Amino acid sequence: MVLPNKKHHPSALNEKPGISAPEIISTVAVGHIQQFRKIQPSEKELVKGILEENITALSRAITLVESTNVSHLAKANEVINACLPYANKSVRIGITGVPGVGKSTFIEAFGKYLTGLGKKVAVLAVDPSSTISHGSILGDKTRMEELVKDENAFIRPSASGETLGGVARKTRETITLCEAAGFDTIIIETVGVGQSETAVHSMVDFFLLLKISGAGDELQGIKRGIMEMADAIVINKADGDNIKRAHLAKLEFNRALHLFPAKKSGWTPTTAACSAITHEGIPDVWETIQKFLELTKGNNYFFEKRKEQNQYWMLETINEQLKTNFYSNAEIQKSLDTSKKAVQNDEISPFAAAQKLLEKYFKKD
Image 1 (tube, rainbow, N blue to C red):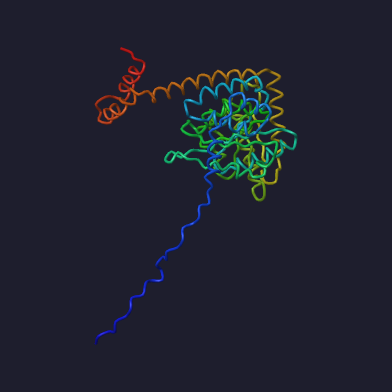
Image 2: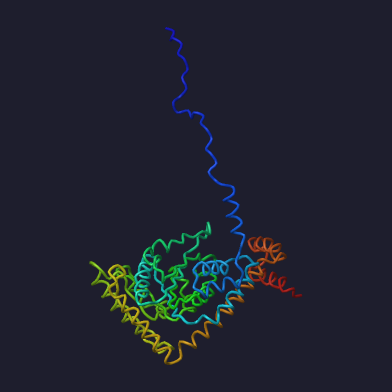
């Protein structure tokens, strides 16, 4: 049997030719935008804007300070030096805790409480950078949706980059800029991965450790490190069915704090429980910080600590610059790959290879 011939019909899934979309981008507008971006304010204009409490000027200055472009370094240093006489008039608070402890929610509740007291609050939130893509989410403004709308608050998320522990490379300089812009309370939120606390502790006046109950945290109370650095431990999420557990955790941490030696400041670390959702206990946290400031300013520890911190960051800057200069040196870049292969093939020890590279960099015989 022979089937009858059928006409070929194109599939209905075939895309039919259409008309091209009209050009919706104005080349004139693009030109204006590009020209505007090329116009960079001078150092004097940035400083003037910062001292006038202009948030745009402050943001642009922070971007300049965070830049890794070598050509921006001199300009950034000039802005920072011009702002120094107007800095050092704030309270610097470091807040840390493991991911999931509710740092952003706590900071928003705490920040709103402070602005309600007439304070000007700057939040410097450090977001972790991916070791693969080197990108960061920078979502703190989204998480602090109420505080970000407060005219007396400024939130600046920054990527941690390659800095150990996740503290942004220029956070210390950013503090100076924020203080010059009139912010009297600076809050630094760490990544909370267990390595950044030392760096944050070296740039703040008061160090607050956030904890939660029921996550095995009570056992961590007997360990040193982060517990020794904390000036106060606050058990967050003390609400709903968790209130009893939170207060039990508070007692556990309070007992653990007695195991550590007395602080040079003369301050005895405290424990407290709070809820960032209901705001219960938030005023008590600020009252604790006020007592700490009264004590440490009275015995002069507050001012001596800031002097030590300035020295520390000078040395850290030297170390960082030496490392940057070493790896950006053309001769070192040529020799580095060869040295890496020699080390991998056990032709030379890692220490001997490093010594040779350093000698070459410093041009030693």
